[in-house]
Image 1 (cartoon, rainbow, N blue to C red):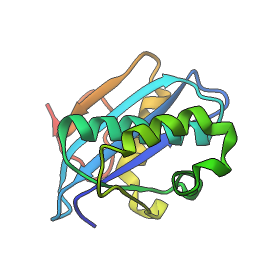
Image 2 (cartoon, rainbow, N blue to C red):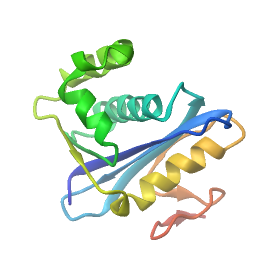
Image 3 (tube, rainbow, N blue to C red):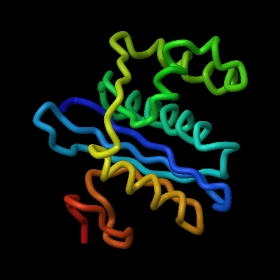
Image 4 (cartoon, rainbow, N blue to C red):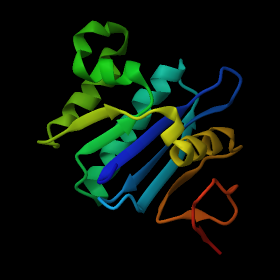
Length: 154
């Protein structure tokens, strides 16, 4: 798995925030860049997944040329493939479709949860953070909890 941006959204009904995280891996499978942020809690877990994809796509346009995205959310993939079947998400999907135009070779695929330890971790960390969080960098900052197999800037 390489030259792919893996993403995840995180949501609970009791949290103040939803969170999202993404990790861009080069063709050798090495982490090159990652991002995490939180935002006011969305209506559902699926709304958080859509927000995670939107923010990830925006970041890929600003920082990289990655066209491949991976998620453990099969419903998100179904939404992207058939947006008209998801009328309750029309506004959110319209934003995704607008971004989609900027990715001539856009691809989104299913990546099992077992392969998403890092981006799942940073999405959950953002969600549980008690103040606004927005980070993009090459490794996780030292003051964030350490996910497995990630370099830390000290």
